[in-house]
Structures are given as C-alpha cells and as structure tokens.
Image 1 (cartoon, rainbow, N blue to C red):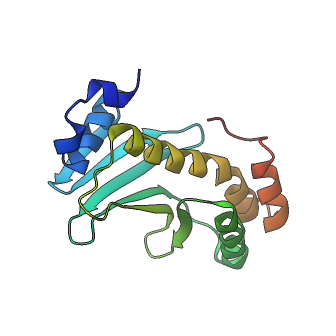
Image 2: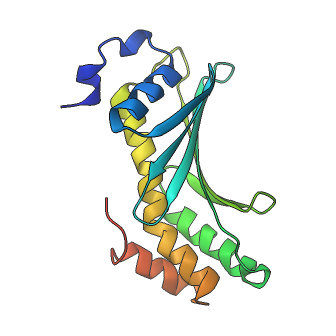
Length: 167
C-alpha cells in the first residue's frame, strides 16, 4: 500500500512533517533538528547514510543531503574527482560531491516546489530511496578508485554493471 494512502492530509502537511512520517514508517532513527529540518540515519548494504532534509520556504525547495564519512588518501583525490565527474554524468537527479574539510562523500538533490506546490509522501520517499540507491550503486566505484587504485572508468563500469549493490 502506498504511503499516501496512509497519510491522507498530505496536502496540508509541512514537507518536514511528511519526512518525519516516512522516517517513522520505515523505523529509521531521526531527529527533528528544527521545524524546517530533519536528520535521519538510513542503513544501506554498504554503509549507514546520514540524510538531512531541509525545507526552504524562501525558494520553495526541499533539499536532501545524503552523506557518509570517508578518508581518501590525498594522492587519490584527483582520481576521486574524476570519478565523481563520471558518476555525475550518469545521475539524472542529484549529484555527488566531496567535502574535504568534513571528510564526507555527499549526494545532494533539491526538489523545487514553486507556486505553493506540495510534495506527497510517495514522492519524498522516492527521493530518499533514490539518494540511498545512488550511494549504494556508486559506493564500490568510489572505493575501488580510492583504495584499490582502479581507474575511474573501470570502477564506474563495475558499478553500473550491476555487480554490486541491490535496490
């Protein structure tokens, strides 16, 4: 049964209220950081992912940031950046970036809801799952480039070949 069938008041709900409902539904650990922000932990096959969603009423955007910690060797950063560029060329929604100061791999996505539109629970759930699936799919490629000295091309081919991960 779809999430929206359980949450009938979605049209009147604040986007972060919907995210909280989804987190409860999936039994994810979460913390309502602010009225307009929630942080949660989602377990994947490869990692646990820290996901933050924030609502900006100013620009009517629901922003998702999915992160995990890693510490790549400094000499592998150029290959990591090349890998992220290759991966981002294949991502239709969202993009990866490396936050060096925080030592975080980041997947970001913004859902623009201009004109007082509202996202439904199914749409938000899909957005969260797409972020986790992207991280799961490309995690092996990032690891192969960072730690096994694979070329970005070879590592990404392995990741898109379906040899790693699950939906």
